[in-house]
Image (cartoon, rainbow, N blue to C red; front, side, top):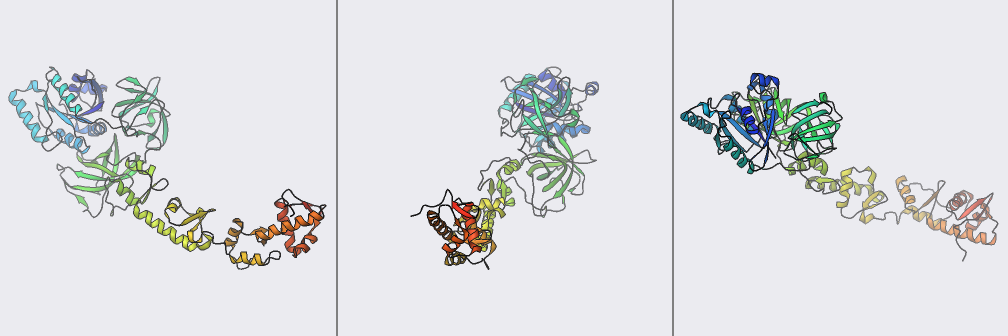
Length: 575
């Protein structure tokens, strides 16, 4: 399916033409029918001779309703540009053409309407007038089809031209990232809230959970329709009506968007290109009061020129700008926007969104659509966040991160220095942030053991620790750990290189020897041995024998029974 938007000056016959092509009157409001003037968006659809499905978004032509025109033109695939042969090119013809170009529409054709009301010379002059005004635009090579809708003249030719146009117009791409800009909301009797819009980016299905932006309200899709036909799933590029559960129709407005949870990073600030229209009669500066038209929405906007650019942009000029809006909008690089000055009935310009989450100050920012630039500016970007910011998937380099070479090198240097400073004890992994943990695997010779990381050259830094040597020299009258770093002492115990009990420290070999000694004593006196007997056998002191026996009790070598120790389940055999 393709969506085609109409464009053109007021009363040039856009709605009449859509009605004649489709049999559907796009003017749905009573006031529109009474005044014969399109005020808001209208919708109609048809099947072309080839069988292609085509949906029309019919927009108002009057200057007072330009914001409604902008709400409908943002998601069309092609443009049916309408000019009346009776009047020729008019001011709103010019403004509509510039708006459609600013929105990035690149496919279209021209319908020269009301040709039955002029003679042959009038038709030729009108066609020449059109060709002069569209020169240099996307309509420069477009066919001009002469029609008179009330008389039925040229309608078959126009249907054929539309068929040919859509045959060369790319279809909507399914990126598995749906976004539905709401252009109409109402309450349906017996069903509740219904929103309509043009679906882009991906499919949505009945029972899908979606998020309403701005805000984080979760809603569920109760039912879907395209062209008044119930669907279980709607495809990108189609006009969709979605019946929603979880929100009142008064809580939704035109300009809101429905998106899939977790796929977008809504923003209130974005960097963009700006093309100022040549027809503007004054320069554009940050001091102006603007409205930005994004998707189907209209938002007050503040503007700042980026980099070392002058403080204003002349008509016909270009610039890079930072745009601030008061609500969150779900944007991607490549989206289009239009800018109008508040209080003026003219379009200022517009352009392409380049960065939806700028990090550099405005004076240093140099935005473009490059994913590499986003990575370079941020250094470390979570792969999921990068996709939400740019719409592109990049495989993670480390853990969940996409990392620039410079940022990775800086973190590795920082880590290597910290590991070296930690010395034999090593660096506590718990003190590292997510990026540093991810970078550990990139450090040559780093060894992670027991929650600490150290250089490979000191992979077992405690093997020759002086306190171990002191304990080995006096196994049963061990020295106090005076002068030993407390962190090193804890690490010696954690590694099993030193045994601690009740504030006394022993070499593991001394504990094993004590176990064998007690086993020999119990072999001769199975009813039990006293502390004094063990003390004397070891040549120790009561101060050291008590914690040593407590350790043997705790490990199952012995069991305490009153004032004596008896054999435990792990008492070693006597050789």
